[in-house]
Image 1 (cartoon, rainbow, N blue to C red):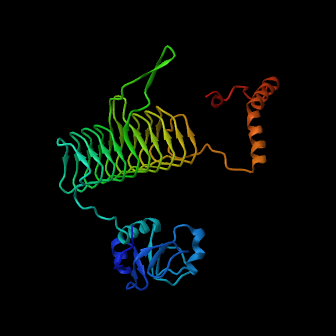
Image 2 (cartoon, one colour):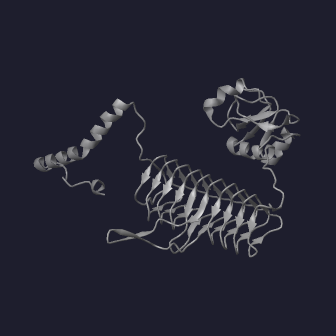
Image 3 (cartoon, rainbow, N blue to C red):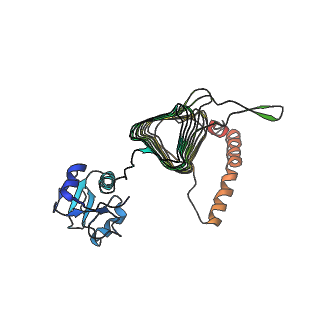
Length: 354
């Protein structure tokens, strides 16, 4: 998104974002930038204390800082409890999304039985199938395919080559990045006689309002009931969500996460990149799962859960791994010793048998 050509007064940005103004409100701001790379006319922000020293050397015209935290700068500034969120608001004001002209591109294929709002934009080579409903101001990018009886809510934006399978529903203001696939068959197979029988996937994917879906993310349709993505869920690139999952409102999931079928993720959860979530489990509202963590059983209490081992020099990692492999044998020897000496219960730890 190009920067604003006319800019905004810092006082206007303060008013529009709800931040407090300290300094010259007549400074005109044209774009956002990092503290290190900023030039005159830019506004930068400090959200991470480790970059605090850069405040003294930045060439930005203004900065966004946290309230109640002394900062080594005399630059005009916006003061707020959440500098990163205020930066997001300022960036959206200074770098607005380009508008798309309504209408259907001559190379697009729109079935006569589809309903396309007059304010919608259908891009080159897009396909809108029979019974599909495209809401007001929706933008369908080049090469997108909207299946039979699928529905895209008002103000949605599908970037190039998004595929929405038949009957799936996408709520208003969705942002779906290139290559995402909504509603492909879930991985449902029954084994018989050493061969696999495909189980028809009869459900849909139903997506709420204000959801963002990253590039090449896939969300499988339900086997019988629907796969549900609630309001304000944010999915990064290359996330896989299996059939009949439910992702609670306001949950954010980082890239390369895999979620097996019928998992239920609560509201306001945060899942780090490359985490793997098993099927048919429940995760409580407000849970945080660290990157690369593997979750095989339900989580009933919110908190931070981590299963990965921090990086070590390879020789040290091999030593630690060899010690971990010996722990079960060591635990058994301790139990035997306790039984012989009469100390301790000698009972097995039930967690070892899970």
